[in-house]
Length: 119
Image (cartoon, rainbow, N blue to C red; front, side, top):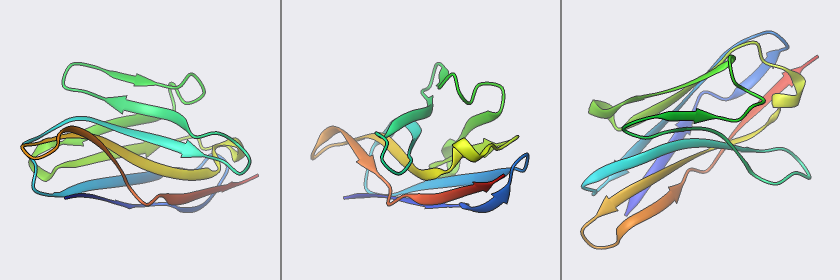
């Protein structure tokens, strides 16, 4: 079983910054993709940023403001969020594609962390 633990959410004023962390634990052979999604009230969950071994991609709404990074030695992904806007308010979820001998390539979700940006 693989678990993803997120931290770093909170309340911030517009223009401020937050850094989210997501650490994978359990028994697995490799982590292929780590990504951040978000879901605002009444909205569908959307991809914010994704990191693979060869590239990263971002939603247009966060390009130039958010940066995804990974520390493979700690099985941890980060999302540095700068110049936050009220429309960034959402629950942010970590997602990882992990390979295990038992299940093969499987996607896992974290429990989510709330980010609230006031105007």
